Amino acid sequence: MKAGTGIVHDGNLNYDSQTDSKMVQGFQFWINLPAKNKAEKPAHLAIQANEVPKKQLPNNTGWIKVIVGNYEDLNSKIPNYSEQFLYHIHLDAGKVFSLNLANKIEAASFLTTQNAIVNDTELQEGELVEFDRNAGEIEIKNTTQIVIDILLFGGEEYREPVVAEGPFVMNSQEEIVQAYQDFYAGKYDKINLLNKE
Image 1 (tube, rainbow, N blue to C red):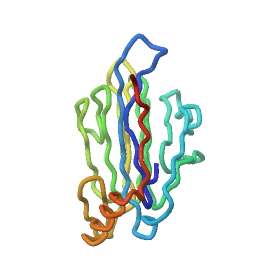
Image 2: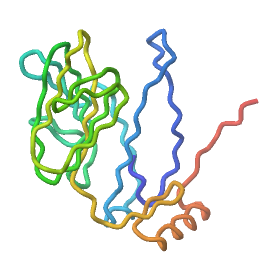
Image 3: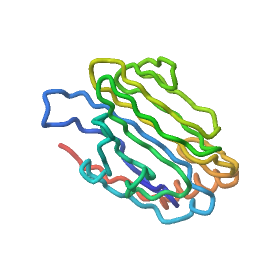
């Protein structure tokens, strides 16, 4: 979803009706648009799971999905307004995966399900790890007997001023004031709720 000049959305999640569980795991990533793109028309792109680029890793290590950005020959359908990436890495038991990042790329990882060893440091499930901005290798080791899932994400440094208030992220306080005025004037559209009786 690209907010652009204004979009109203409902972020409710539905559980997977094809399983016995009503547990939902979800992640929201909000990416600040560059100033030149903030006034563009809002947009929404629905991408199904089978449309997310995915490939097997070498030596039966696991697989990688490219949600944002690109990796080798994989390219996400989600538009990129700067150099950014979001990977879902599924690493089999006892396997190792590594990749190289360019200089000045901000990167972090989130361990979603199990502990892992990242750059020779054991990290716990649910831990967020931020890497330095120097070029180099990120190595992930799965020393468990089950598969693990890791989110690896980042991109180039954002150098424009950021002013956030409520649901709005702009580049100045004046733009925040204008965003609120536009919202209350109905310029961001509305959600039509069905009247249930």
